[in-house]
Length: 486
Figure 1 (cartoon, rainbow, N blue to C red):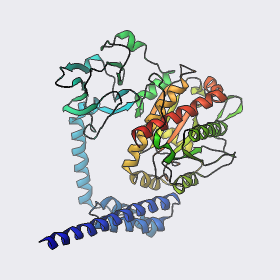
Figure 2 (cartoon, one colour):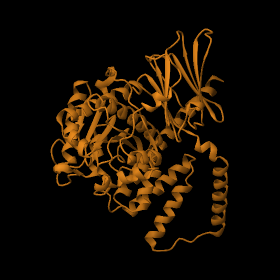
Figure 3 (cartoon, rainbow, N blue to C red):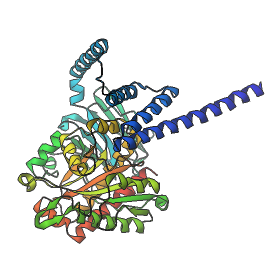
Figure 4 (cartoon, helix red, strand yellow):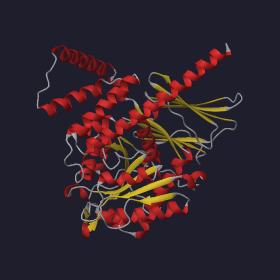
């Protein structure tokens, strides 16, 4: 009997090892397909897609989307039109009809859904898709038995409630759950009664632990005093864009994680050489700002114990496809691409602020426009099919990690910048199809440190002190990310 169990155990180990090997081959085939898509080489794409399909079937994955892509590519190469199957067409129409019906049925849930729940320093932040009010929040305490529990019932549906794990140094335990279909519950548990306050500002609730105020409700005056957008253009953007807005909290001392000595970071200064990037008043060039901030960031991170590499340390141009090669070769833990934003002349005076992007299929027109500006010199030969193939093949865990990293960096940037200029606008964290991030095999973000087209912000961005402030803010964001994701 013992021999029998040993035999089964050995078989399971072998099967697990074989399956892991297949998974690695499957991931490698996906990466090779991305590379072929970058080169727009149909022959290579067909070869890699066939590998993906064969390996996918062995791993019992749904290969139908890849098979459809392969059919399209082969038909394109043969010069034959793709024949449409009426039955499939009818099935598709039925599915679309059902989807529309479901969307209409659940429109209220979608309208009032919660976009994200995350922590920043000593706060828990809940972002919504719509404006909210005091009536959407119910706060109460439960008697200690044996722990103190502070409970928030928040109107809204959060699809990721089950998978959301929050932690703060000031609280022993935080539980997030969908208490009812349209009520999200967040419970803070502690042996001692924590001092908790919260503020409401349009589409966001910020719950602060150990805040100075003991008043749990927010007055209208407090809401009015929340940081405002600097322009009507930004207000419009905040409604249209799919973004995660992070309000700056009171600046706190950032402690560099003990494991920083084991972390490698690659910093990419956007543009360079003949590609000057955006141009601001008085012929201020984006490439200059990007490189200066990158160098200051390199210095700060090295002082904190990180291993740091620059994609460029001088005024040279590097192709987008080559920028992440260094990061992958160095087996980097993070990739940071630094850029400066711009607006057309008619909107230049009214648009300013800092925003951070992570790679994902863009859901807002604003993100698409920004991405188009950054991508235009490097992927002009890529067709829409190739671009779509990239986005469909993105690694979801890496997107999630990049999203978290972007939130921490955006928060760090705002805190640092506002120590000198209180009016720095928070343009949020957004997703977008930035091809400079595609090749990175680690969490990666693209930062727009400000608008070079805005007269005042352009002047600040050329200041040495402000560039150093921005670099320090990014470094604090890096520390914050690693403290939560060792």
